[in-house]
Length: 146
Image (tube, rainbow, N blue to C red):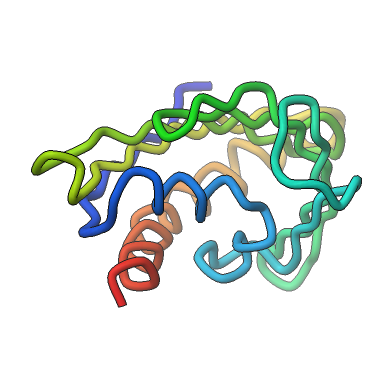
């Protein structure tokens, strides 16, 4: 499946944006479908860390586990779903703007179905994510700028 890409400019430093978006405990604050998110080891973000994430699609909640695959502060990160019927593959990149006073955040999300998720992913999960991503980035901008 092709990736969904959204980009937004934020009046916050790349360091502040990176610290916020890579801390999984913040996911429910800025992502509509995220009901809960917690690192399974309780440690700060690190490569190999697994994060339990519960998302709501319609009236159903779906638990999944994401694994941190790459961290390059304050430039980029990569997380990948490792279980569940619908798995996200998320790449984030942050570019400094105005000498590092502002940031441009780009999120690329690929959604992959496994088992029953092969039906759910293209028919429900991907269209839902496509609609939600721009709103999520706007919510993130509002949180970081205020």
